[in-house]
Image (tube, rainbow, N blue to C red; front, side, top):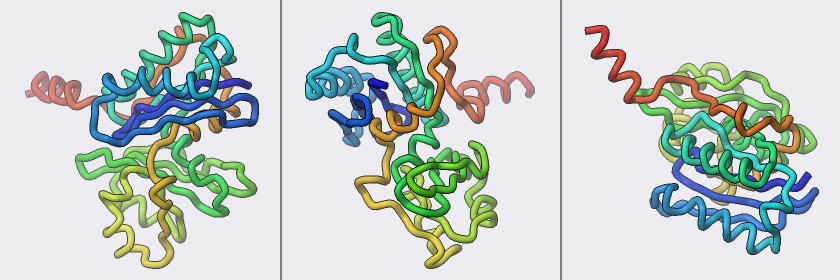
Length: 226
């Protein structure tokens, strides 16, 4: 399957072109600019570098959350627009599954973590063997302390690592390992690899994966209940 993959669910952003089993190009930035500024130029650059057009693709894949509410919505909206314009199906990829694919060659327990604030992380647990991933626990928003009580040994990946690495190391010691810098953050290429095992849907049917309400929704509910 030929896939244009989009990642904008967290602080980094990117686009990649997977043509069959070959990664033709990938664009990645982690420069603090907003995704509304960077995403479309990254997509154009990925297609151009690959020598392909959107019409050469079989599907558009997008990191569909959890993550930044704004980032997820920008990515999903962009992916839907491209898919509808090119009459292509859409593949919504759980963000944590995409992250886990960064380290799929690692044999053992992989734990992607994203800083969810409010004392929590977005996380899931996978077991990697021979490049394949098996889900151990589903996507959750939970306290880091609770997560660490469930783990014996693990490789951590994701933008939550720099935030929580000291606590993880203090709690787990040498039982914890961490992905290197080039595999730590969200990558569109990993979204593309994960998308190969997820059935495409109509762009009209694709929805983000949210694990909790947005800040605006929480504040509205708090005011309503006062």
